[in-house]
Length: 429
Image (tube, rainbow, N blue to C red; front, top):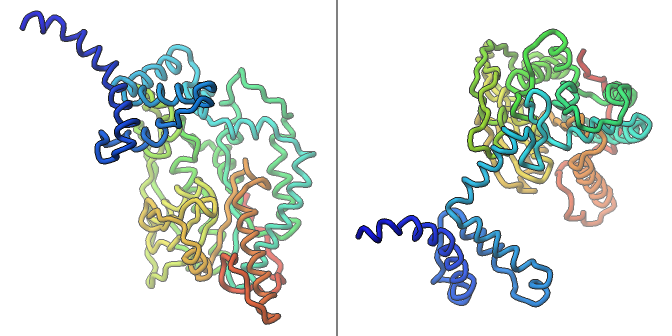
C-alpha cells in the first residue's frame, strides 16, 4: 500500500496524459461505427466528435490537418486545459501587458478595446467617406419614405464608438495614420448629409459627447466596448423626448434617474474583459448603476416599436423596458441574426421567423434603424433591409399588374410608391 501511495502522483500524471487519447481513439473508431457505445461528457464531446474526427486520408495527413485536429481535441479533453489557458492569459495580461486574445486590444490605463473600432477610427478618410455618406443618406431617405408612406414613423439612430469618444485610450504603439480632421470630421460630414436629404435621425454620438464635455463620469466601462447604463440612459431619454415632440407627448413615458457608482461591473460592463478568460480578472473598476423614476400615465397604452440594429440597442432597450408603461419593442439583431422582445427587461431571445417579422414590422407604430458610427454608410444590415423593401416594391408592382408576387418579400404592406412627406432632421445638440 505504501509503494502504491508513493507511485500515485506518477500514475495520476500518466492517466491525465493517456486517458484523453484512449477516450478519443475509442470514440473515433468504435464510437463512429456504433454510436451508442460512445463515451459522452456534458460539455465537450458533441463538439469534439464533430470537429476532431477528420477523414483519415493521405491528403489530411500530408497537410497535417488530421494530426492538428486530433491534438486539439485531446487538449480540450485534458482536465488541465481550461486552467492552462487562463494562466497563460494571465501571464500575457499581467506580466507582458498585452492581450492573450486577438479580438481584444489593451489600451492606455488598461482600457479594453476591440480591433474593429480602432481600425475604423484610425483609417477615417473624409475624401473617401463623402461619396459613401451621400449615397447612403439617399438610401436612408428612401427607407424613411417607405415606412412613412405606410403611416409609420421612422427614426435613424446613430450610436457612439468608445474609441471615437475617448481617443486618449488608444495604445501608444498603435498605428493611427488618419489625420485629426478626418477623425473628428466624419460625424460632422455625416450629419450634414442626413440633414441635406431630410432623414429624421437621433444623434446619439452628439448626446454622449455633450455629456462627456459637461464632466459626466465615464460613459463606457473600462472592461467593455459598449456604453454603460448612464450612456444608454442619456440616449434613451433623448429618444423619448425627440419622439414625443414628433409623435405626441404621450407616445413614450418620460423618465429620470438617480446614479450611484459601483465597483462591480456586470454583463456588458465587462463583456470584453470576459473574452480574455483570465484566471484572476481585473474586475474592480467604477461603473454607474441607475435607479429609474417615471410618473405612470393615467392610461397606459404601450407604443409598438420595431428596431433593426446592433448590440448598442440592447442596453438602451433595457432602459426603456424599466420605465412606467414601457413600449413593446421587437428588435432584429442585424436584421437576420436573432429576434429580441422587450419587455422583459433583458429581452426575450427568439429565432428569426420571417413571417412573424413581417407581421410585427407591419404592426409597428415606430420603426428605428440603428448604425454605430463605426459602421455608418458601411453596415450590412442596412442593405439587407433595403433589399427586403425593394422586394416588396416589386411585389406591389406585380400585384397591380395582375401577376403573382414573388416569395422574397419580407414586409407585408405595400408602399405608396415611395412619395413620403418631407422628413425633418431630429438631430440633438
